[in-house]
Length: 516
Image 1 (spheres, helix red, strand yellow):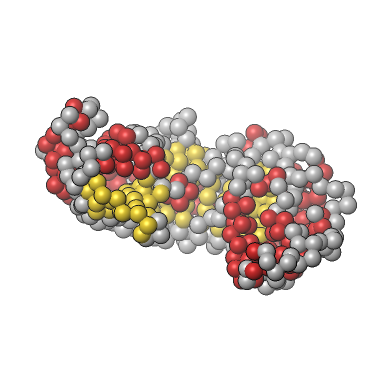
Image 2 (cartoon, rainbow, N blue to C red):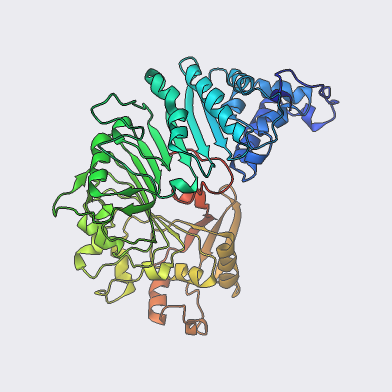
């Protein structure tokens, strides 16, 4: 492509004749199409191995080029073609500089997805690209910087070299978002927090470089929380920490609002003094995926005091039920969204005091979880109808279920206030087929609310012969469900990337997503 060597366009086709759709479309519409195309390209799994979409559309014809160059939002993310076969004449300085010029005054994002091979690509990034970005940041607003290494044998010295420019210019470290993701095998399970040393040999008494970033994502690197005093969002992969580490993190991050821990493990022999809780007033979102290879019941929820927590996501089969955890920690008063993945326990606890802990929850999302298992009634309950007392505010239910039995569980779940259900296409097919086969049981309205379906249900949905199915609850419980369930609800598509903070997999091809 032209920008590989120079900013001058190659010989492009002239403007198409007026009869073609390219000419008929208004420039404003064409720009919107380009922006949507760029977003779709960035989310695709083959984005790294293809020409960046803005470059592609600007090389189609002179008309498209003029429109693309006049759309600064199309150039707000700088993608370097590091996974492509780059010609020897390619100049990274020209590439980045030209891209920044086309973005004009819009804050930019720089994506460095550095492959392990060939080696000279790493050298280009370390010696040319990163220094250019750092030096340009006082003039150009660099909003976000993503650095991802795929080098298996990367050394600590390489990391030091990568960030030396940052250390030499601390007044320039004003990025809003910084991602440092090292995927080499030598960095697996190596992320730690430390209050006594920083990753490059400084002690706390030394003058440490301070990153004035508000959003941080880490893998394969040891960091000191004191270096990031302005954090509002933190995502860490493969974190090994003890209670003191968590205390230090919260103590040095008073404005932390969003915390995501992927493959989290408590350090061996990590102990906690009884009654020693950790409070973080600002935290509103907490998502934890527990490392299933080393299960440990001493996870943070049981001793964190999070009075303003609104979103809680747990991934992993824990030793305690959610109700028990939240009863031990006063963290559920403001909770609105509860997400469970790969969870086998019931919400319910044998303790009667657990019955009302989830009164504020409005939205429940279940990923690889049976509704009938996690929503089972309390052992002290006489009827499934008593479970309604635990969910007075519940409005939506999202499931990635694909089996017919899961849809039956949904139809048998007795709740009068649910208005919207998010289901996979397979589950929607089961819902339409299984409930509509008797004709009068289901009326489906389509074409409303931006394509969402509205189901009008007449109970009972299950005939007498279906009750014999082992997956269906007893007849009396089914009748209770029929009497309690609202007869109208919207069905929308379940999108795992929207309904979970933990489903992004940086090991897969594709660029890292925006941090919340």
